[in-house]
Length: 111
Length: 117
Image (tube, rainbow over all chains, first blue to last red; front, top):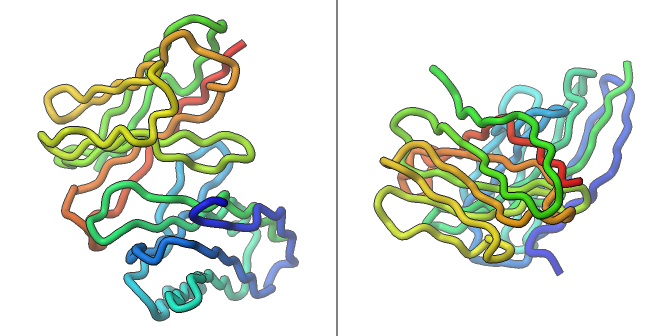
């Protein structure tokens, strides 16, 4: 079993829809939780960053962490075609260092 | 400023040959990471350099893989006697190296797409 599980999709939604992306993890030592966005043939770029449990909002994006359930989510409101990309969750332990990634969810937002 | 750069962007090689992949981190970043991204496997950690400390090599899949970082800046990932299963995108990232915290954000390069025939 992988340390971080993420449904690879693909996920297709109409423009304007609310998108929910999720990851589960098994290592309770993880303290830092991130969402990266990766466009085709590009490197991942950091989208959202959360420390420990709680919510964080940035524009149309909201990240949630529930450490008791070992479950993290990313919500995208009013999705746009430009949001079409692969979304990767990633996590690390308190001392930082290597990131453990989920498999990535491929999202397509149709106009 | 300039981001993480990697070269070459694409590399096609024959099985059994050695390859070298290069990474130029963001200036001033003391931490440098190599990851591999392959279909169905997602992004896998390979190796991590932090300043003058011994590198964390725990993700290297076999002794055919090695990496070095010269002068605390540029890094080279070497794969000896390449196999078809080595075909993947090899991504390099760098960070400020401050343990934990948002300041330790990893910034990724565009990757090197390796194809082993």
